[in-house]
Length: 351
Image (tube, rainbow, N blue to C red; front, side):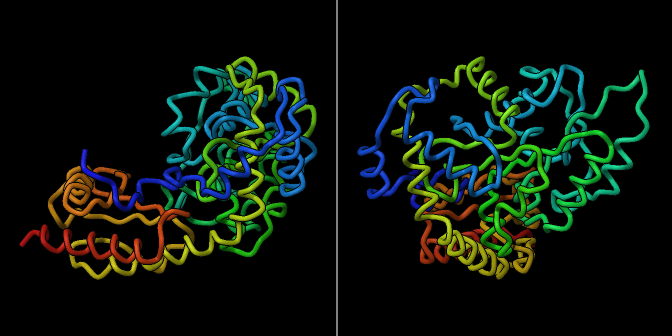
């Protein structure tokens, strides 16, 4: 495999710093499944305070946060309304069908976002012939939507529509803190209308593992049971929970640097006549661009870029590439990567 010099495949490529590793090594530990790991307990407390929720549970991954939340909220046959390209539908291996027996009900949004009107239109009069809508799921920020931030008023209206229709509301908060930093809206305000919400630690925040799911205490009690069913007991988890504590204390405000680096990258990519991109649409740390004018598929373009320059991107469609900035991508890296993409696209431009 070619060497990866600049990894823009995902912000999951972020790595714990030396300072974070030292903090993790010094963590107090105990059996978290018995509630006896002080570091894990502290991370859960901090998350409750940050998100304004009653209780929380530390889980190994964001996907597990979504799937545990779905299982704790839903019964087999219930419907989960979500945007057509939302992560739980396209990137979690059909987890809800296998684990909770709930049925994803996709709707078309704009940039990964839908409206309260769409919720009300989808969740119409109950019928004995139709599965009940149990949950509406919102992804903040949007992934395939290009890192866009749901406006506070829109999420409030969507949650109100869900509640008015007898459903619950869940936030996939994989990049919630990116949204908070970019918009200036506190994470607690974004979370207030939701019945459950989780926070990822292993993306832009730079921790190696985990997410924290939060909500009412009775919901978290059910989530703990699902965590155990799925093999999520991590025992002396304080060692990895400490990475999350360090991240929340030191790595939140610096997310603004990732957003600026993404804009720098996008502006350079836009210099090529062979790319399709609106750099002004970049709000956070995700950049998507089309390369159909090169005549290459996204996979072919990415493989060639990686082999020739050491810059790694991810495919987000047949002719769409994605780049995600994070704590291990400097401004100089973003500039070099943007120039490399631009140069390769120009060389491949179809006459």
